[in-house]
Image (tube, rainbow, N blue to C red):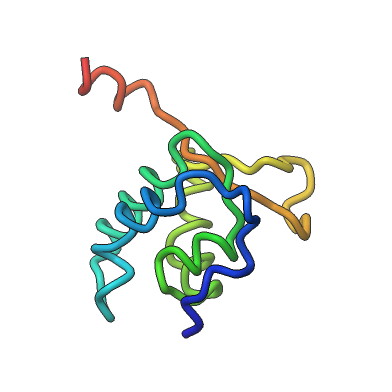
Length: 107
């Protein structure tokens, strides 16, 4: 898999920090679904990212991420789409959503 980051905008903020967060998933061939999903939640906590960006950061195929993580996370409300009314938008981006029960646990 191509792990170069040339496709990310030069102004892409906090790339080093995102790579550090993604490292436990990015550096292993097989990571648990729970680890991948929690990493996606952290990476997308305060920014929208495309499937392509997530794929590069996590060193995972876009199809695998979409089918095994992104779609289930959208369905259960952990992720939201930037272009909510256009599911197949070519520049679709995702951001994590803090759920009420998660806030209660952290308080």
